[in-house]
Image (cartoon, rainbow, N blue to C red):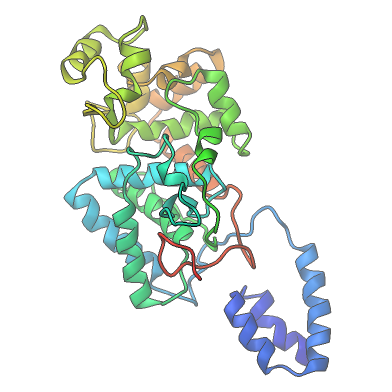
Length: 352
């Protein structure tokens, strides 16, 4: 009976590694043997497919999610693009090494080429300073408790809610731990470029446990934010395509024909109709051929995905509901929990 009481905070409340370590130090040897056997049995029977939980920080850091939301509200009020950056960051983090904040790590002598220096991320991925600000605030409130991986997930959730004026509003399960590996070669393997056709896009999602509908639904995030001209000029503007003539003429006035990453590479709004609002306008743009990327236009190249585009464009609330579920699903890709990874003190560097 004592052994069960000893294990209660570990098994029921899902104690952190640090809490377990403190409990073990205080326990007697014969109790530890019984507890180890019971703990092993429970862990082996536990489901490996959904280790995260809503309200994970309820006891560990009750104000955690409120702190993240407060910083996000201020940041988006100053620049709505900050919200778009967080949603994109979650995608770029989760598709490479899972949702473990590996995209945040800076180069070091031991790891000189992390993910953030890979072409899909450099120089277009931004928001690192915003993550730093959130982490700093959380370290004041609850030192060493909230992972950087959960911060990215919470920030993307809050950005979705704020930019949609509350129409996209969902709870984000948490309990992720931070990874310790980051390499610039990995994003090239898993992040499909905007020049991709539909089959390549679907394949990149399927390999991560997502499906065709998730692809179509998450593509709706292209209704906010800006894009560098180099992401679409060469394959969608300078070559024959089905892009709307009016949009093409406008873009040629904004983008140099030789736009290249790191060179002369201006940005343009991805959705000129509701540029700072997360809504279903993206799907109306796909139907009217007023989208920037080849990957956006590709959604109309199969009957299945074209049907989904029409439904999302025409049925009020349809896309918002699906987007909520797809965001949670994406944020659960290959997460690290339990004894895996660590809780970084600084999101840009692993603990030593």
